[in-house]
Structure formats: structure tokens, C-alpha cells
Length: 233
Image (cartoon, rainbow, N blue to C red):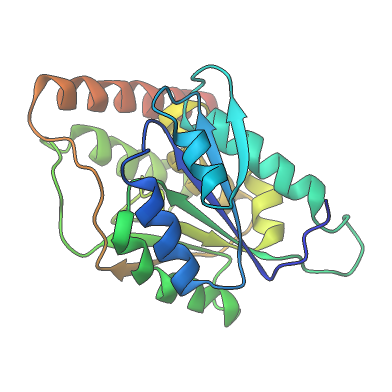
């Protein structure tokens, strides 16, 4: 199926059936001509059925393979459906979104402006207000790894809300496994000669706080960030 839209949005989701309808509705209100692809990471709560019911294209793994894996599956499908290399067609703008943004996804509009203006190849959303989180060990390691291996300083190196050109998508795909996706993308993009810019936005998502579940989540993130650093140093 060839892409006939100027914008393609890849929404990653794992057990987000409760927030996904609001996320998709908000995206449609802000990007009414976009084509939306939901990348469902083996959800057990019917997220895939919700996506289909909302009219989105579904790319689904039968088992959970991690964010980087399911996002790669969706991105590779988008690349396959897009223009061929050397065709002269720049292809659609691509937006990466986490499925738990709910209504706040309607505020993503400014994220694409630097890319459309040709001022950046990839933009990264910085949440204007911190929501949840722990003591910052994981994100600080990602920030350090990005600075050490790519030479750039990012406020939000692990933000999953990004806009990028079609060529940039090709350059950074496949993504690193699991939670290493964004950290690796920062490094791979700079090494490919791409320009990154951060944009502060009023967004909100499902937060993990200072709970056992939250600490286990961030420990898994840190494991994957260290893996990205070791593979790319």
C-alpha cells in the first residue's frame, strides 16, 4: 500500500487501551491529513482492537518484544510503503508518538515546524513539566552517553515524541532494542550527519513514580541505555 499522505504517525503502545482512543483522537484533530500506524507490542488489553476500531493501521507483534522492536516493525512497514531511494520523492514527514499521551497529543503541532522549515532533520519534544520519575540515574546516563558519543547536549534524550524526515527515518532504522531506542537514535542521527533540535511542549503521559514498579522500569531502561553505549562506543 503506497503512502498517499503528507504525514505518517507511528504510535507505540503496550496495554494502552484506556488512553489510546484519546491519543488517536487528539492526533487526528491536530494532523487531520495524516496516516496513523499503531505499533502494538503484544498488548493483552485489546489495544490492537482499539486501534483498528479507531481506523488506524495496525502493526502488531504476537508477543512483547520491547518498544524498539515494535517501533522498528512499524517503521520498516512505513519505509516499504514509501518512495524508493533515488525516486526524487522526499516522502512523508514522520512523527513518533507514545500511546499514553491521551488528550495532550493535540499539542504536538509545533514539533513538526522546524522540520517543515528545513531547520532540523529530527525534533524531540521536551515536556514542559516533569511528570513522575525517580532520581534521574537512567535519564542522566542517557544524557551522558549522548554527549560522550555524539557530542550534543539534550535535555530530553529519551523522549519518545519526535518528528523526522523520511530520509532521517531511513538513517536511524532499525531502532535499538527495547528502551534503548531513543538514546541510540540520538547517537546514530548525529553520526549520520543529521540535525537535532528540541522543542518544549505542554505534554503529559502515564508516569511511573517512586514505587517498586517505577524503580524496576527505570532499572530496565538503564540496562538498555548501557547496552546502547557499549555497542556504539
